[in-house]
Length: 438
Ligand SMILES: Cc1ncc(COP(=O)(O)O)c(C=O)c1O
Image 1 (cartoon, rainbow, N blue to C red):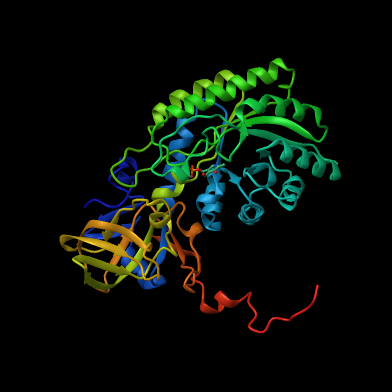
Image 2 (tube, rainbow, N blue to C red):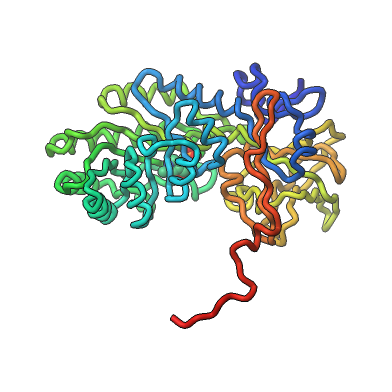
């Protein structure tokens, strides 16, 4: 068995044949050949491994076992209903950032008490829905949001449990600055020096209850020290709130998401070291630990399967043109992100190529100057680590219908999302709109 996309980094997953491994030279998802999936669903298509998700969930759950905790999967990473449902069955709650994600979560069977509601710009309608759904926590990001939530909860004669999402002002290293969220001046969270005052305000408002403290410092973190710095700040704030007499209903310590995965040769976040930081701190606080991981649970549980359309030489460059593009996987274009790419079948001697999509943008690329096994038009490629921030960021740009999502579990395969049709592209449009005067 050769090296597969997932297998390089995760021995446990490799041993149980979960995820993406090579058998007889052909790449498989669990026990199913990706070539068979391409025959079933066409290309491009996303393929997810249920057992890879289970394995990651189990690893994180075990790492946090020393303290009362709940893993609230961050729906923004991949909101496919079949994946949400799988995570619900594993015991996860969800972390959402919009009313649409609340709808998705409920469609997958989550109850309000399973939901933590994050987000820097929640609307009146979204807060109203959250209050009516009786979510576990609304992670408020400003004094104005807190007051608005109090007003809305009053209309419903409810007391809304809130956590203060604090900006702990810690610097993190991530591959792209767009994925850093906890430094001074970032748009996210309540500025640290204002948080104590907002906590006092929460204590004085009748229709909110200060139930938690929260941070989310960034995404794709491979160094775990910033969690220690952020946690220290949250606990310092907790002490100040207790000293002010406002700690009576504090119950949750939400440390956000952010745990990194292996896209290339970078090391994965060290889970044991992470647990050594987080578990004793949470235990000492007496609060229940909440985490909001997205990428860690699903990132390496998915690939984007695409077919080579053309080979072309231009200006001394060798191009591999695929039927998937930035419309399906935006991360290379948006974050300059690295994704491993490998031929699905056995391939000839590697050459250095650019792998690009069909979209009419020079930014539509998956890899530049990449060594790739020799492939000819018609052959399949798997773009790795595409389970998180892949399908959810897809678009219909260039009038391209969105692609299917296939889920594999051992030897079984299911269509978790159908391919859109061209009729779907124009479903909400009107060629002859009805004009009126307002
Ligand atoms: C508030 C919040 N929680 C959790 C996450 C999930 O992050 P990740 O996928 O890096 O775990 C995000 C994503 O950036 C987020 O904004």
